[in-house]
Length: 321
Image (tube, rainbow, N blue to C red; front, side, top):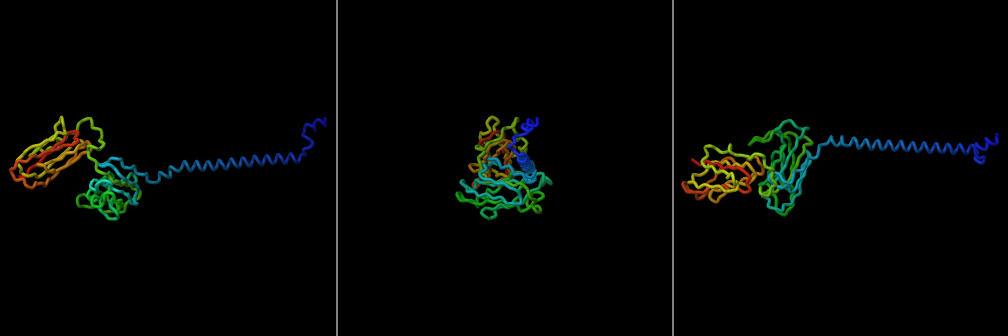
């Protein structure tokens, strides 16, 4: 029996000490594998933690402003940039069209972090090639400026550096000649700057029309001396009247839909206004126009020439006493 047990216990050529060394080696290998797996899990946990917490870190920074759309404020955007205060915005731009057809478009979005009222704005300076051309207010709405300023500073085919620099914060926009006090500008206000090219209303992508046509009856003065209105069946039909010339003291030209309206006295244009939407807009105020060569009592034709008109419009004129 003892021979049988000894035979089943293991081969006589493998000593007991050698077998124990093999067992210990296997234990060490298992421990090393377990330690490696533990380290790998820890690394993955750290990477996973970084991926999970990174959005929270990004959320603490100001969100990037949305770029301007391609068409805005009667212009097509040619070049633009954006950022946050207090850094200035800069555009390198080479005009390929006439500078008088260009305009600057800018906007400042205060957002919830800085909102203290509806009338706050930033005081900004606009420069071309280091020369300041305008100081104005940057609002929580798209604003355009620079037709005359840019025309005198840009040259067709020559690269220029257009820059918008934030000077400070105003509690409300300027009104007339009154300029509010300027304080330090808050950091993180989203600002945008673009160079746009004027587009005729006939080439501009128009918004869809409202369900009900826009009427401009309320803009017709009951005491106006001369009134010309759109033909309801054909708003692009020119309207005209011949009167004995007395001179003009004031005008209301209102268009309730997209289209261009030109007012002519004889063959001279005295008003030219385009509407790019379905909100009434136009020209209101004193004309201050007295064509050379016209004498009191002389017959003269006054006309409105529409172009691309989509709806109701009106011209009301008041003659001089």
